[in-house]
Length: 238
Image (cartoon, rainbow, N blue to C red):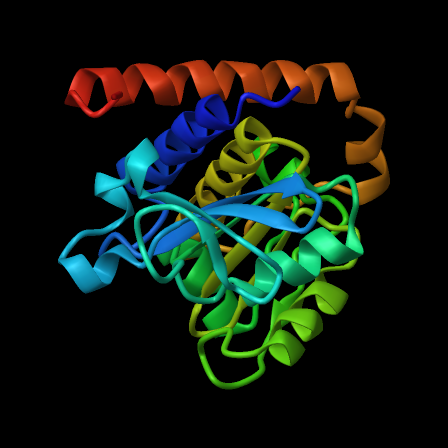
């Protein structure tokens, strides 16, 4: 049986990590978790209260249905752009957590039209590509738009919305935050390397030969421990 309070605590931590690890601007973004049975855990619309996900605690997590209606929690509204979550959780049963953020360097890659290339170990996680969605508005305002993003995402780990931000999907909260961090690190390295010349890329088929599920799971666990430790140092572990 799922310990919902424990999931809320972990989800709140992951939302704080998005800010703490520099994966977004101005405290914007969010991570959500699929409880199953048509229920999603997601931060409330904290901006209305002068707060951001940097302040997110267990009590700020609400339960919504796939129409965005709050079923349980101390707030009337969830964070907006929940349509990406409803659509990705519907389309991909293996996805239990997903996140949206405004990563500075990954955004620049999308805005330039360059996209992510296989230039660093962080980028190898995205050997199947990171598509760029260019639809307007620069905000996921409808179920139709959420569906379009998810179709473009396909079975991949992440997608960039040009001029807006990134969306990431994973099988767990830990995997999702690790993937989000890898995306921004890879984008940052690629952009810095491009200042000195054309970044040297690796062949995708060769990259796939170096990948194993065991290696990835170990990297996710290591990332999660590191991110938790950094929250502890800031006094925001709660």
